[in-house]
Length: 319
Ligand SMILES: [Zn+2]
Ligand SMILES: [Zn+2]
Image (cartoon, rainbow, N blue to C red; front, side, top):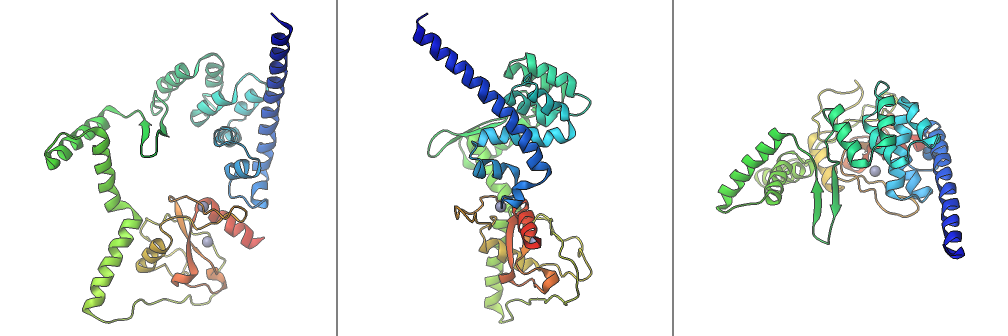
């Protein structure tokens, strides 16, 4: 072997040793940052957001680290195995979602010895709900994405039945991708808050033609002093009960208008990049002026935030 090849190999060995050592130290620091919620102090809603935006880690690396940090709270053996250098991060990430106190020893041992695919199969054998193939969605070109997932047999049979119905209604053979598209479209038409809000708008404009009436009644908060609690109800859940005797539930019409106004998306804007949060799930209604300070359910006082940014907003509001 020439001197040059030997030297390149030695350099690569040395650097990867440092790289792996850094990875372990970073995990240790992130565990402390999570425990003290340092990311909130720095203006980030979650540890994931902090590690990507403040630390500049890639999506995959930060996802691996954060998943291990979170799981290590319940199963510290996971973090310890990574720190001892006996478990690579990617494997730790793979077993983390399925790890419990009871199975941790067994799974950590399996992860040390098995290649990724075999490990996934072993997880599937041991935990009935784990698919033998990892779920994956990846964009393959400007207009298409590839989805791979594992389904229970009964679900597949139902999809085949749906495929038959879609084929019948279109009077031609329809593939699985188009069937899925139709099924998803149908589901969203009925369940998506954005679609429901649009229907509400249509109904409202029809009603307005028939009769002239007050557009809406904004029920003012009655002013009693209550502490402002986080309203963590997902927005597509009907209001089952009034959370506090002083708090007036947001009327359905206003809820729909808030959804339409904000395109059913979190309204948090990153102060540095000015980019808006893209989350469209688990959204909460947030009173800009808290109810406890006299904030009302008026459209102008309401906005949508994802759960992480809702928590951040209240953290900063109370700081
Ligand atoms: Zn709020
Ligand atoms: Zn958000």
